[in-house]
Image 1 (spheres, helix red, strand yellow):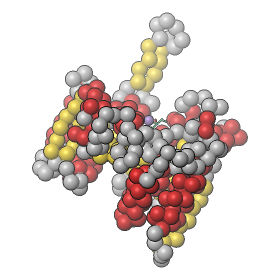
Image 2 (cartoon, protein in one colour):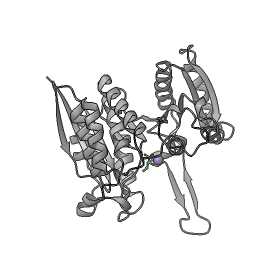
Image 3 (tube, helix red, strand yellow):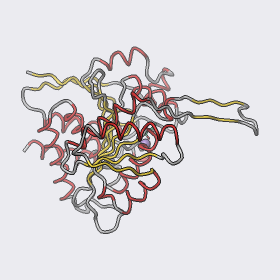
Image 4 (cartoon, rainbow, N blue to C red):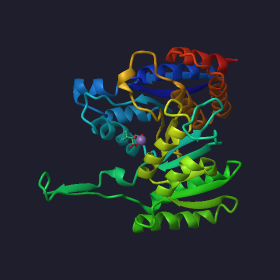
Amino acid sequence: SRILNLAVIPGDGIGQEVVAQGLKVLGTVLPQDVKLETTEYDFGARRYHATGETLTDADAEALKRHDAILLGAIGDPSVPSGVLERGFLLKLRFLFDHHVNLRPSKLLPGVATPLAGQPEIDFIVVREGTEGPYTGNGGSIRTGTPHEIATEVSVNTAFGVERVVRDAFARAQARPRKKLTLVHKNNVLAYAGHLWTNVFNRVAKEFPEVTTDYLHVDAATIFLVTDPGRFDVIVTDNLFGDIITDLAAAVSGGIGVAASGNINPSREFPSMFEPVHGSAPDIAGQGKADPTATVLSVALLLRHLGYEPEAARIETAVSADLAERGAGVRTTEQIGDALAVRVAG
Ligand code: IPM
Ligand code: MN
């Protein structure tokens, strides 16, 4: 029999509640011969206040032993902004080389969108996850004076750009529409824009079946609202990807259903799957959080580990559940139960 050895990080706020439902659905969908082993880790605000730690070397070593990581949400108003983001989430993305930040956007039937006319939305964003302005390559001089100068250098390596562009081409190739859009700002960001565009055009030659397209990021935000149906796969850098995936989530059902994977495609280190939403401390502990985004993140996790039929079963269950969702309000647990029932039968 096979073993799925999962690290579980519920984290802060609603993280605990949504992860519990994700695990419930995972336990139900796995084939009989797969043994699910979970180890829970207490990263987040509580650990930080108790010990001052966000993620130690020993923690990282422990996490490395797992097949994958399921994360709820990290973040609390009691911790200064940036401490947990940089000390935990970004640190893990860098340490485990999560260079493919995968964020699908699919508007499912019955799901409300602020856009007019219920357009068809079904695209994925492949956001670079380890470079760009996220590397901490910056500094400040004359700090705190009226002449302060702060820099935040966007790091783009040929190696880093090529591997994420290749991954995006492969994903586009595998989809029915086979279309890939590069999103950047090469009219202004001359050096990084040049590197991205050159690498994109060079790799494109190896994927003759994939239709390619280029959009400046500002124009991309317009089309995400006026014509989201034009997108199939988008590849972009870390910061543009951060921004457009929030917009993408907003038009395709909101953060209640937006899933993501921080993926290391080589599987050298475990990949981490998490809902796009945060810890929502204002509604924590009340059973109000929608666990759907976490459940869909579990589907991405399963697909990454090769459990394609199980991943598809979860997505079908979520589709059906959303389509039949009435006006009635259900608790976090009721939604989790409904999804578990659907994947079981
Ligand atoms: C995300 C988040 C993070 C990011 C923050 C919390 C550091 O916004 O996962 O999109 O900017 O990547
Ligand atoms: Mn973000």
